[in-house]
Length: 145
Image: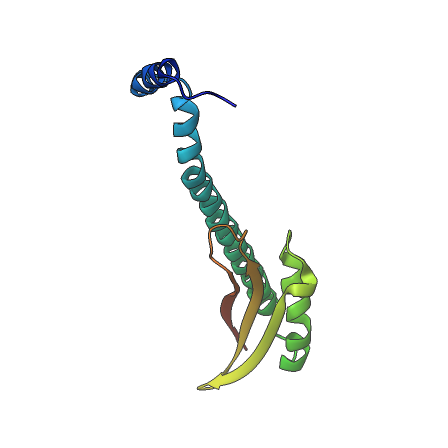
C-alpha cells in the first residue's frame, strides 16, 4: 500500500500536469473512433451493391423469359405459362433457384393476350447497417399472338 506523503502528492501533480501535453496513443484513439462509422459506411455500400446486383439479375432473367415468349408465340398460352418459370430460373445465374418465386398470369387487351411475368427473390441485408430483409420484385409483360 502506498503512503500518502507530500512526496507522493508532488509526483502525482507533476504527472497529471503533463497529461495534456502527452500525445502518445492519440492516433490509435482517433483510429478507433473513426473505424466504426467507416465500417458501417463500407458495409452499407456493399449492401446497396448486392441489392443492385440482385435487382439487375432478376430483371435480366425476366427479360430472357419475355424473349422466350416472343420467340415461341405460336405455342399455346398454357404451354408458355408452364415453360416461362423454368426459363426465368435458368437465366438467373448466381441466384438460388429454389428461392425464386415466379408467377405467370394471362390477361386480354383488345384481341391480344398478355402474359405478365412476376418474379420475387428475398434480399437479406448484412445486418449491421439495418436495411433488414425484403423481397425484390420484377415484372415483365409480353404479348402473345
